[in-house]
Image 1 (cartoon, rainbow, N blue to C red):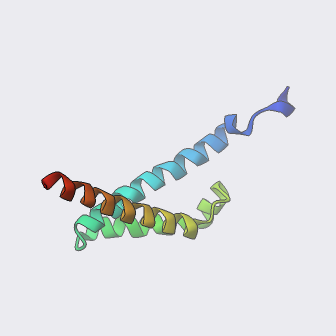
Image 2 (cartoon, helix red, strand yellow):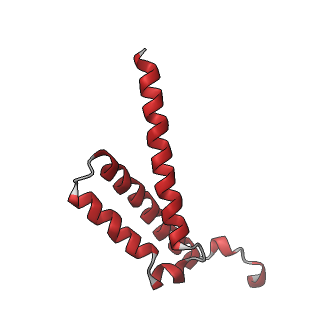
Length: 94
């Protein structure tokens, strides 16, 4: 039954997905730190390092998802989540 094996069960695919998901999580955290403290050189450096990963050959070997697209989506997500959170905080103060 090797021919019917689900690709999601392939340990190499699972490892590749785990690497990418960890990078996504780390990038979100770095972007939030930069947004909160724009002069935080460590957070800026971390965000840039993760962006280099998303643009790397290694990343391209791990997935077919365009790295530039992922960077833009995550930046927009953080921008929107922070503005939504700010609106909620303002409405709670009234």
